[in-house]
Length: 330
Image 1 (cartoon, rainbow, N blue to C red):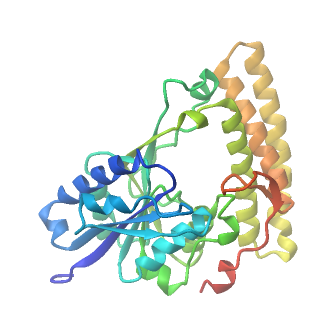
Image 2: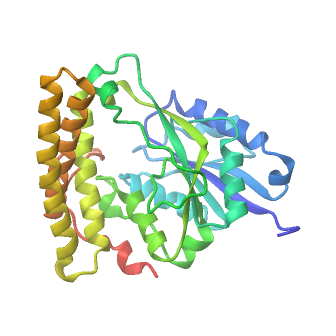
């Protein structure tokens, strides 16, 4: 690769977060400027801000560093529309990194993600996200450790990845025509579907445990009600994604797995929650309740429905049709 300099874009998707966005952009700029010379000589890194608000409202962010930041307004609602806009705008880039607009990358985050990709030439690298609960978080939420994610050995392969700390090889995505599902844009799970497709097409997703980013949890999410709602949504979307990738007639295999699994989770979670209540064990009680809601979501997802968590309209449970992106992937 001597003499060849590749382009890498960091896509920051934002939606009505004018206070947090500048902090994230400042942190990303410091990461870019702090890259070792051997990496900066091989990679040109820039930032793409994708504004998913109804009207443009984050365009002034370019003023922080016009040479490294570009702004794109994507008014079509849904997280998938914003993610696909990032793919489109990065058509000439070799690498695309997705982060949330409130993420706080830790020291050497960018360097570590890029270094692992350069070493392994895998098709995606997933970093470790660390939650930061607000002081107002309900004790039930903190005890259940809902937002915590497990650590893994760096270099280990994972079957899917979230997109809040993710590097993608754009050459591979373009070759296989992989995009985010619009049908899941208001539900969630669009990143799980795309990364599972990536693996199904022969790609590898490697974990980079040292590439850490802190994710401050908003106060309105650090509540029992929100965690239960999210657990239900996660259960329904994971059942749907499994069905979409299931090639058995009528998706019967995955439906049976999640119908049985959902019932089992609800039974186990109920017993665990009751045991926790009797023993005054709040962590056990919280994790049991979360398992119940995830199992209920899996039952709903196995029947082809999901909870519409995102979007600008009323939240509801609705039927989800097979994503069109599955027909176009190669």
